[in-house]
Amino acid sequence: MTQQILLVTLFILFSQRWLFQNILIYNQYEQVTIILKQMNQLVTTDFYNNKKYFSNTKKFRLELSKYYIDLNDTYCIQSDTFKFYHPDIILKDIYTTREIKDQTQEIVQSISFIKIPDFSPENLKNKTILPKALTTPFNYYDSYLTKSNTGLSAMCLFQKHNHMRARQQLAYKNELLNNYHAYVDKLKTMPEFCLQNVTFIPKSYRLWLKDECQAFFKIINTNKYQKKVKKYGPQFISKLGLEVHRGAGISILFQKETKQLIQDYQNGQICGEISNYVIAQKYINNPFLFKGHKIEFRIYFIIASTYPLIVYAYDSSLIRRCATPFNKFSIEKSSHVCNTAILKKKIEAEQMENEEQYYIDWNLDYIQELLLKQKKIKNKNWLNNYLYPKIHNAIQHLIMSTQQFFDKDSKLSEFFGVDFMLTDDLQIYVLEVNSNPQLLKTIPYRVIQNTKLVNDIIEIQISYLRSKYIRLKLLIKKILSRKSTIKKFTKEFKEAYKDKLEPQFQISSQNLFRKIIDKNLKDSKAYNDLIQKQCIL
Image (cartoon, rainbow, N blue to C red; front, side, top):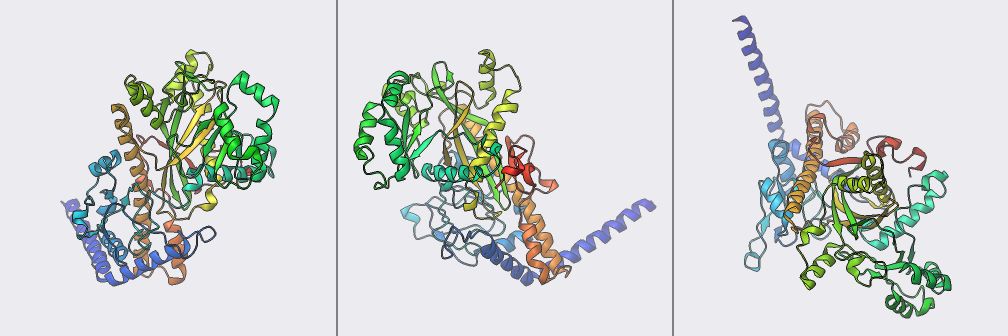
């Protein structure tokens, strides 16, 4: 009986203390809004604006394209304050959006508590107001730079976005190549071993640069080159830079295509005068084949945060086989390029068999099984001991070559798909990087995998957001209780704003993403010991 009385007494005391604390916080509503406003101002000044690469006059803005949004500069303070007093919005629920009608929209709407109405000319006069509870916009477009002001009408403190500026530094072929070359040049000044794992992009010539352009035409005009083409097939492909994807802009340099290139550049005489971002890249003519077909595999990865830099790569992979059997002398583009868009055109044009056979499996274990059967490898742990580390290391280097362009802000993230090719001698090459890759309903199994993929991405975003929310809320309470000072405020805020997972919000073991970069850790540990300390820029 005494024990029961004691428990009741403790419960009453705890309840009174909790009630007192929360009443105090509600009585300090105005102070809470002021603190949140100051935090948003700090983010605007110290974080998202990469002053070195982006003009100070450019605001990081949000436009939920296809909708008519009522933007007002009081939105963030209303949204952040609302979430401060209603923690379940962040800590228990998911409030996300998608403005494009695609499979991703179906997925996010199935797990979210909000939906922004579809845009149409009929409802143009009725502006949509962004819900105060919105936490993780999962937008198709990255047009955050066009309408609203960060920390005011969008990009609020308690939100996590799936886009970031400077994505083109990875996704545009010309920028990717520029950054890769600059990165390799820096590594050449470091210990010799730093270059040994940075060979995942085939030898390339940037034809908009006079010296490289002239060097390329000098090569293709030699008898030695002509003999190689005759004996081994095409030696180069050409690619268009900028935002050209889905196999567009890729040409295999057979005789006809080579003649056209020679004509366009007057056999190198006008190198340096043509500004088109054309790349001439060594053609990899020894691909690993599946049933006689060339294959490519796509690895998805997300930059989960840029403050600090945190990156996850997906364990499952979309493996695609080319539509027609591989023949290095074939002039059929579908024999050389396994892009989904090219594959679909070929299937539709020739009424080929069901396209399901061209999407092999989502697990790279399948490739390992094939290699074991063909006795190309003996190690049953080859995938985890060799291929995954090679893939992850390539992604790490790609990001290291572009990280100087990123805004540092824990609200930002970006979703990428990088296409790899495996050669017959088990080397890997990066073909291209796609930002915001499309998730298509090509086959039923792919729909299931895409659903899992999007859910896993959102889990990571939510986990980091929840962790940061807890830290910032504790800081606000600390300030309200006068346990912190204005002098300490900026320093404490910067530490709390830094992305890291709190123990109660760890990523679930079922999530197929694995962390490959975490700059919360030091030196090579930040890169899973795949990059030596002496090689980190």
